[in-house]
Length: 210
Image 1 (spheres, helix red, strand yellow):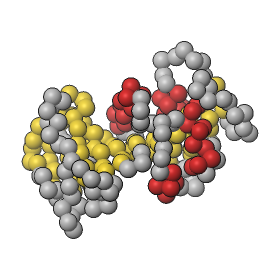
Image 2: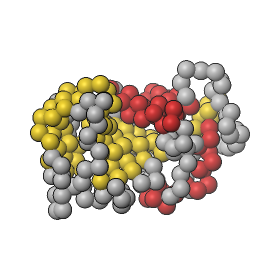
Image 3: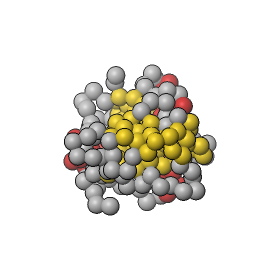
């Protein structure tokens, strides 16, 4: 399945780590100030979108959609919707979490939007990967130092975690008490997370301390 990679303007420090996750077959959309990462990522844009209020339009020989500055969708949300129109089912978002908490939370909600449409979405930064756990269980390998599950939809019941230091069985996590932070995969095991009602945000941390 061909993947759509969407590049936002949030800070990226470990370009080598991010580049290792990219494929030559990816369809790459750069969103406005995400173009600051163009040279470091060493990929050619498939599409450029933005209102260009935070980065000059580079006027490359690449399809470019110029958006109005005043609109309901952010440049990143527009890029996701445009990619869905073009038939993509698998999404990787990079450069979308960082100093602007409002943009970060808004971009995390894109994962919920994609999941509601039955599409696969992942957000990656310098040291973590985020995805939604809903109808299907999700596995976590020993490649990750820690993982956390957060209730971000108001209802998360029937949560089960296996193969981890802190297992759960048919549990509930509320938005007011997020006790699913900083779990660990047991040595030699593959952890699994599932939820019967609601959705969870799964954050997998690579090689980091608690």
